[in-house]
Image (cartoon, rainbow, N blue to C red; front, side, top):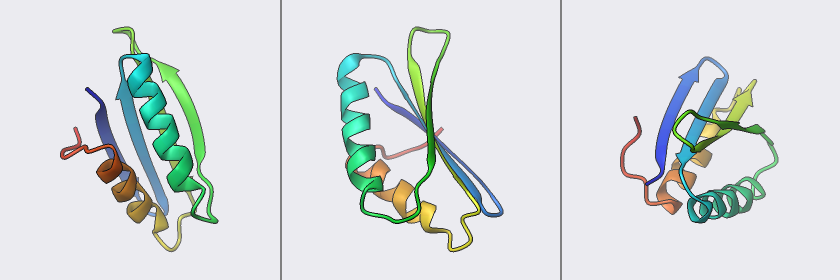
Length: 86
C-alpha cells in the first residue's frame, strides 16, 4: 500500500509517497514522470530509505507563486488511486 503525505506553506509544497515493494516503486515513478512532464515548472525530486524497509519519493516545489503544485499533486494522487493522505 502506498502512503501519501502533503505539506504546504507559502510558495512551498511537498508530496511524499512511501512504498514498500518494487511494483509500487515502478507505479509511482511512471505516474510521477508522466504527470510532471506535462508542466513547465519542474520540482526537486529525491528518494529516501525509511526504517521499515520501504522508501519515500519526495516531490518538492519551491517558489510556487501560482500554486500549480496543488493541481499536480491532486493528479498524481488520483492516478495512484490514493483517497486519503496521512
